[in-house]
Amino acid sequence: MFSLEDYSWLASPSGWAAWESLLTSVHGTPSNRMNTHPVLTAGAIASSQGLSEIQARLLLEQWRIAQGAAKRKFSDPTRWFWTQQLIEQSSDESTADETARDFPTDVGVVDGCCGAGADSIAIVSWFTGKWNCPHLS
Image (cartoon, rainbow, N blue to C red; front, side, top):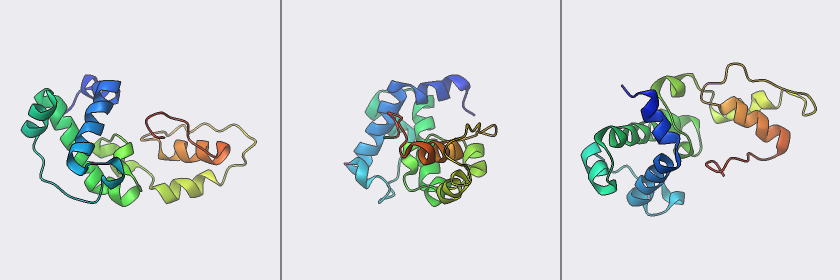
């Protein structure tokens, strides 16, 4: 099991850089990220990027989820970080977009059940026409 500290690292600039580096090393370019299914090991990831075994296992877990359940729910699941529970409970992209359109754009909205954030991102996108997040742009 991963700790809060592990997930904090993943969401940090160094964790994001490690994730992007893994995606680029596997596929060459971010636009080709989900088109192949290489065999990855935590040991290979750790040694190639100078990461701890835990960090490498966390990246491998993200890869596994992105290639499986998240790929069925999102057009680019590599732009998200997951836990197994978050992906199981997350709205898929099209459902979140439909939910967002239920709200008039001139009212305030609080997503009190925010888990992975799919509905929140869809609502913000619906209200503003774009999602302004450096990791998701």
